[in-house]
Image (cartoon, rainbow, N blue to C red; front, side, top):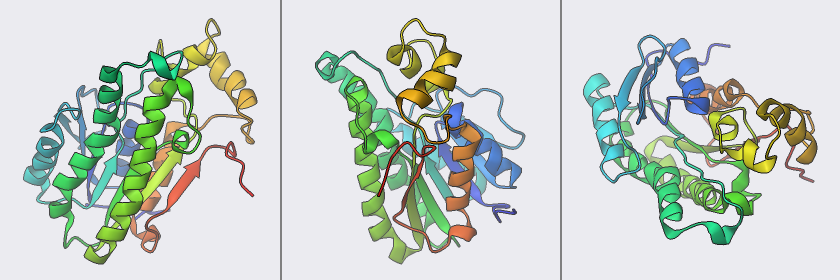
Amino acid sequence: MDLNLKDKIAVITGGSKGIGLATATLLAAEGARVVVGSRTTPVLPTGVLAVPVDLSVAGGPASLVAAAVEAHGGIDLLVNNVARSEPAPSIGAFSDEQWQRIFDLTFFAAVRTTRAAVPAMLGRDGASIVNVSSLNARLPAGMIAPYSAAKAALTNLGTALSEELAPQGIRVNTVSPGPVRTPMWTDPGAFASVIAPGVAVDEVMNRVLPEAMSITTGRVSEPDEVAGLIAFLAGPHAANITGADLVIDGGMLKTA
């Protein structure tokens, strides 16, 4: 299906790996002009503008937005994707500095990027913001308590923004993935190794997680599946969807 995103200007925070990279790849394939901001800038799809930036510091998000506007003249789509997690054995094990680091990148980066981007989105046809939250906003876990709390704040922010910005022609939606096969799960010291120490990461992702978390489909999500949902919400096929929080978790969250 043509998502009708050709020549749309898209800004993605944290687009160097995982969901962000998958989203940048998909939007570029759909003909969008993509700008990615992250501390590292690996090889990205042809035509994607990589902006090296630390989004955890106060001025980082504004510099990313400025680079996008300078290159393309405005912004049609904003994907607030960047996040940080530092698993710990218990809530009490997290220091104040860890809480601050996690909130700076997972929540405040979205606040600052949105604040900087909105003026460049006003008056654009079909402007849209998609916040990448997490199922942990609804199902918090002690070992990632700061991350869960930051994602809950991000989900709440999305609802508030949707109410404020809809009359100005900007839709705001949230995507809340469950476990996804990304470096946040698979890197050394990441979620998978904390959940099942000593077990091979592939075994954790392919069997342990789906069984332990009662994932109905029997598997975790892939980054390109989340990217597909983001791209749909960003485009005109979702023109009357705003204020939504769409879960993509293989049926892990059981609802009546």
